[in-house]
Length: 141
Length: 115
Image (tube, rainbow over all chains, first blue to last red; front, side, top):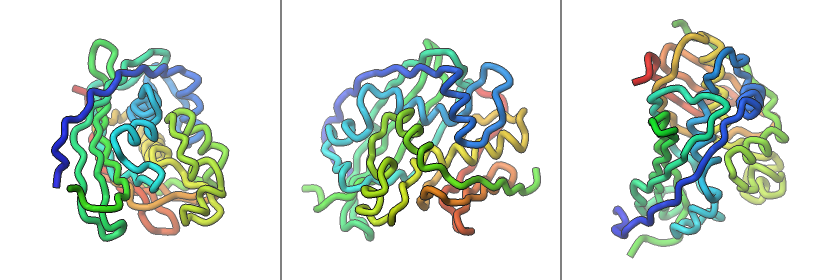
């Protein structure tokens, strides 16, 4: 069942993709060293969450989702229009696609948040579609 | 492209704090062993999901630095804990992150010229 309520417009944020941050992510993930201005592709995800104007916990809570119950990242789909580049600041635009409350074998019921976040710099760079599952106590009314 | 296995680990607990800082995520299961244990993970911090996907991407980049990732569809089917040893298995456009032989992330990648 899809919750039929108007979703709020989410504030736009910014993400500073510095060369230092890229170097650090490459070291932590075992990536080859950067050879040009292209950043590690995980920044489509890191910049999306890291550039939100508020932490994902606060965003979730503001939507009525129970972050403290232990959300589970289920799936992400990333589309790259052009590679993200280091030493640029990107505009981060989140949008709620939908929130669904469904029966769950694991939790009884669960809220499914489908959130899309785009990174652009006047022109589009990346879009990520996130599916995050939050345990919920009862069926939607 | 033939199948390739890239070992990774041990997964660093302190790195989890750095990932969380980048992600602006203060979920305590990534930051303290006490919170992880209270959530049923035992006394081991839980790696943030994006870090697990990054390991797969990095393995693909090491396999062929000239390939450009233009799309990813990743499913997160298990957890990675601190001190884990992992294997990033890549096979063409498919990649799987394995923990003790079991998948924790499965992903399909598309390569080519960005649109």
